[in-house]
Amino acid sequence: MTAFKYLLILLVPFTSLHAQKLPNFSPDDQPIAPDYSKSENWNALPFRTDMADFIPPDETWVSDSLKLVDVFYIYPTIYRKGKTWCADIRNKRLNKKIDRLPLKFQATAFNKIARVYSPRYRQGIIKCFSDPTNNGNLALDFAYQDVKKAFEYYLANYNQGRPIIIASHSQGTVHSQRLLKEYFDNPEMKKKLVCAYSIGFKTDPKKYELLLPCKDSLETNCYVTWSSFRMNHVPDSNSKLIGKVCVNPLTWTMDSSLAEGQGGILLGFNRKKPFKTKTIIHNNWLWVTTNTPFVRSWKNLHLMDFNLFWYNIRHNAETRVKSFIRKKD
Image 1 (tube, rainbow, N blue to C red):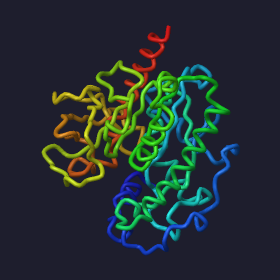
Image 2 (cartoon, one colour):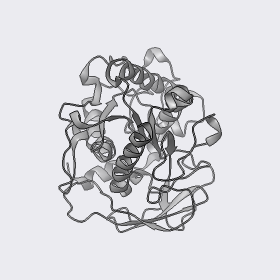
Image 3 (cartoon, rainbow, N blue to C red):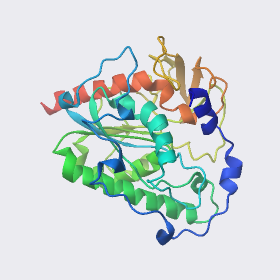
Image 4 (spheres, one colour):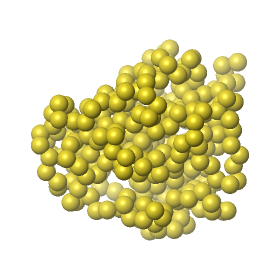
């Protein structure tokens, strides 16, 4: 399938999807739970070939054996239509979309500096975010339990004391925020956190006692977040994407200076010259100007929160890891 057709899949109007009728949420009605001791229940694992290994032609692959840190990546909502509130991880068609979209164009930003771990989880359907009842919240809480179990399995079986990057987008960030609160908002685990790239969903810094937004490109043991919109577009004040903190992915600060990025990617790694993007923070969201085809006229750039800043994220992850190691030494 071409990149353009994948964009069309992502841009299917949400109205009919949100309106689909589902029975009241019940844990017993959801697909079977994943067993994280089985490799097929992970989108990405080190030392095997998967979509998290992709790199542009101007990048050089680094062996997993040489990487000193791990990234635990939680993907966004790809499950848009179905008969259950939460997705079935055995759904091959859905898994293929996850691998070819968020895994390939988000998780790959970290594969130069970190071993990539990404669990398949029973994500909540897109309707969860517009559901007027409590069913959507119950489904998201159910989905989080998979993420939590996967993370606990990762800690017990894979981590071996290595520093950790948390990376997520959209629904993945709903879950990563809970993960950060439960596991890293304490002195011992905070020391293990290089950075959390917890992107594309509203963030309230008051939810954490110890964790703070990163103040610059070198700070560690902190988190970054942003939500992207076209320059001068004012999003709905009730948007679930707008929180109380925004870090500019081009400057890695929270000031309002205008910045130009190193380049982004759309839905292919073969372009010789990366697309260019400029940003500025306005009212805790990110205003963006970009020459990226198809998306340059979009008002809401949520789907491109990673793509537009792929090279900047990749460079910053490397910078923060080096800073983390220097501080530790």
